[in-house]
Length: 359
Image 1: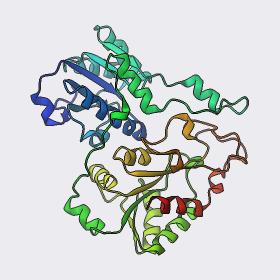
Image 2: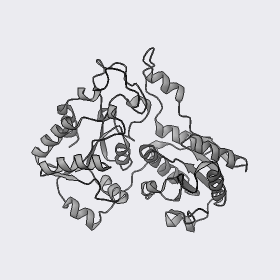
Image 3: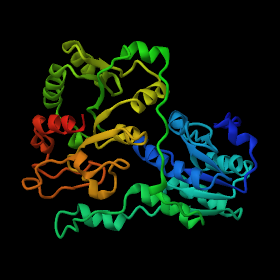
Image 4: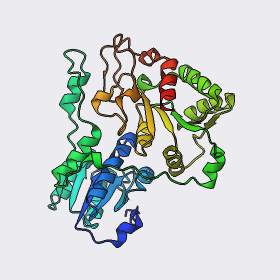
């Protein structure tokens, strides 16, 4: 039996009467989950009489904490909801919630199976159009169709339009900054300097700025003595690297491994600037309206993964004349021969000047 009996979310939602109840499916990954937030905020503001339940992994729950009329249901895909029988069990649990429609923002095997189970009960399901053909044309090496594709945020919004709930992302409003806990205030020393977050890692090396170049960036910024620099990362190897960097500079604090995810989000939401790869931390910062600079390797903003409401000027790209096949993939997992060092073509001076321009 699933232990997911108590749905967590905004307690106000539990006391209201709703005209409809939409299940939103987005199980992973962190960046993609974070990109749902501006869309769901806009939806909630546009349709306050519609309840939202987000089906996602338990770890991601704090991402949705500031959205009205929203609850989170934990998808235990490695436990009670694993496999076809687990998904059948999950569909029964979801039906008991009074779901009236489903917005599938993931469109993977698991959500397709849930679509079948829920659809058999007459529940309408609309799935995201990922634009696979367009993305294939954008990333192919010959006869590349190099143009801006629809953003992922808009693709998410289109799903709700398909359910009969059109939303305009231009109406989105960012939340107020969250108060920091005493633990966070102690960690940050309540510094009055500009708060700069740096998230130097990504899933693939092809879109990760070399550590030695990032250290040059940090060294210059530290010498300015106008920034409090917070380093973000996860996993033992990354934490070790960040700890070694922290030891060398007086204005650098490594927060990796020191905070809960909820505390980390509060800190991110209070940053002045975030410097990130094309990765999840960029989207976590952007969902709070933090000015976000992104470094791109073999991927490209044209694929639709630019952080929410960030100008294209905040995207720093490699030498596209030298590396003219970019983007070679959507996620960074396809690297042509000779493109292994593509990130090296981004000069530290370029990154530093981009930060200065936002200060």
